[in-house]
Image (tube, rainbow, N blue to C red):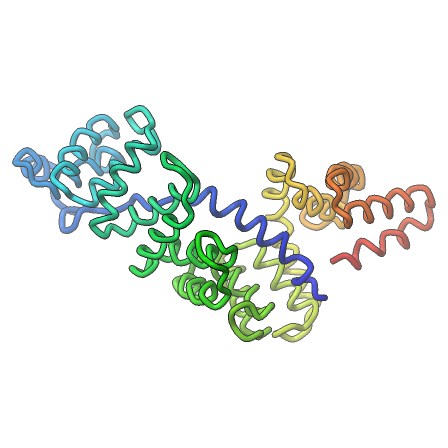
Length: 344
């Protein structure tokens, strides 16, 4: 079993934990042809009930572009444009109600406007609607409907939707599990430069999930994501160099990428560990034990490994026992800790 095989459940778990709950929807959409229009002319057109002008003026007030930022004035103009049926304004209005910008937060009102916009083919609204159904925000959680809207947005080429759709096929969420379909959509997202998708595609090539196993392709996709500072991809690329999988065996390159990954990993493992996430506690304890990304600290290592061990993680229990045994045996400490490095 390779290092990647052993780590896969942890990596995918953290991927889903971090990505699906914190995805930011795009808002920087300018009204067509009006982005460079002088403010006086834009205001004149808006006063004449030009929906595109109303939308652009609302956007400028929402973002503070050339005017003082003011959510209430933004709301006034976006409501006018949305009520005229402009899909972009309807999407923006959905965001306003979802985030509570200048109004009381209302998931149900947000859903209403997202739906109006999505039914007109607005890709951002379709993605937003997929998220709301996936997480049950303002509606009953419905993975089938989430899949439906993600698919609509994915077919329009939205990388985030393609990635989410691929993950649905990985997990069998709202659809039967389908490795080939998962690989298809994640490949499309990866080709658009989405680092999370590039990382997962690397995993797919390493494991042969939905596509033929290919270590060289795995290394290439890990590299693309790693160069975008994706910590888990950096770690996997380091492992590829360490083991000579798809790349020449190179201890220096392995150390370079694993060290970069560790430095980033400390931050997000710490956040996850403090929330009680057992896998993160185990990984953080291991980083402190090895001195990767942080100064070596056996006290902190034991703290985090103990918390993970109490949640019945076998490796943490094993490592904790090795540390305690090494502490008791004094000069045998280094020998006892050899199991740490055998663990990856």
